Length: 247
Image 1 (tube, one colour):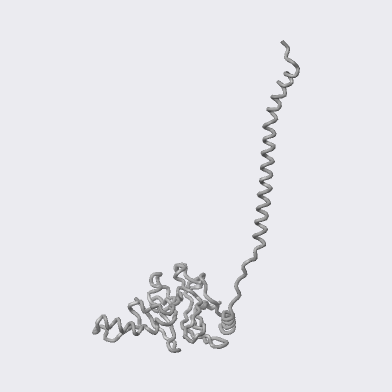
Image 2 (spheres, rainbow, N blue to C red):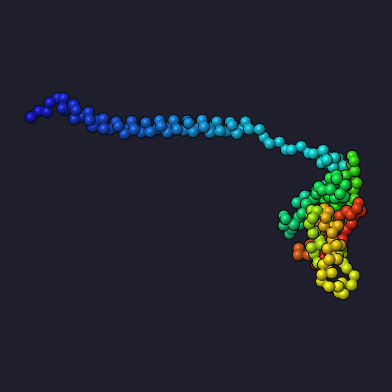
C-alpha cells in the first residue's frame, strides 16, 4: 500500500523540527547569558562610580598648639627630630617601644605641656625634654641625653606615660622616693603608711618613665636588662623632681 503524500511529508518534517529545537535552546541560553552579563556589568559600573564619587577623608589639620610645638622645635632644636619606631632595636617589641610624644599638664598650671623623645639628625644623640607651655612659647627642660649606641637602629630607651592617679614607679619595691630610714625598726603597718605618704604627690600627677637599663641608657645590655632600672620625672609645686627604681 502506498503512503499518502501528506503523511510522508509529516514523517520527514518531524525529525527536522526535533533537530532544530536544541539549536534554538542553545541560542536562547546564550542570549540570556549575554543579558545577565550586561546587567552585571552595568551594576558594577554604577557601584564603582558611586565609590569614586565619595569624598576622600582628609587628614585632620594640626591643632594650634601642635602647630606652635612644631614651630618651637624648628626654631629652637632644628638639628633634632622626633624618634620613630624604626629607631628602636629590633629586639624591643612594639609594645615596649613606648611613645615619643606625650601631651599632658605636667606642671599642673592648667595648660597643656609636652614630653618629647628627640634624635639628632646626624649624630643620633637622643634627648628627652619636658616642654612646658608659657603663653606663646615653651620652656624646655632637658631631662636626659645620651649618645647613640651604634650607627644603626639602636635606640633601646623607650619613654612611657604615667597618668595622674597611677602608681608608676612606686609600684616597684626598690625606689628612691620611698626609702625610709631605720626601715628594719618599723612595723609592716608603719612602713606601708610612710611609703604611701611619700608616694602621694607623685601618684597624683602625670609623669614620664624611661628605661635606663642598669644605670645609664643605651649601654648595650641584654634584652632582659633593658628595664632593670627606670627613671621617672614629675613636677611638684612647680619644681622638677626625679627618682630611680631598680629591681
